[in-house]
Length: 191
Image 1 (cartoon, rainbow, N blue to C red):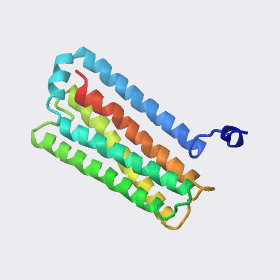
Image 2 (cartoon, one colour; image 1 turned 180 degrees about the horizontal axis):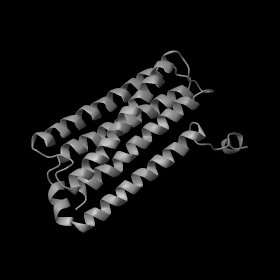
Image 3 (spheres, rainbow, N blue to C red; image 1 turned 90 degrees about the vertical axis):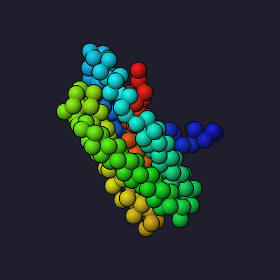
């Protein structure tokens, strides 16, 4: 018998988490569609405003979130391999990366506001602040989830036979990462 027959495929984590993730992704999908429609109505303004965004911040934040997700994956793999002392370390690095993302996003917002740019400036900046602001709230929520997972991992709550909670939190964190993978090119790169 193959490994696939011995272990049926399943979603990582609790099924309810994926219902939440799917609903959240649909809301973001609607926001992305609204952005694209409004962009089509005023392409010159959107392209001009896009050029005022700091590509370096967006690129660095992309690398930070990808790195964070990688460490969260390492935590899940360590739990499954019963390398329990590594799990909280990997989660802690994921938390630090998420916090770094948040700090860099606040620096970026501060620079925009210091230049007199707010969500009331025009439609592009309204979308910029709303989309990245809602995403930042997801990052903060994800950090809270990771901190809870870190505390539980320090108590040895996750192992090869019990990592559903860890997988659920990791799935949410990966959704946060995936959202940024769409946001970055949509706001910073799309001409």
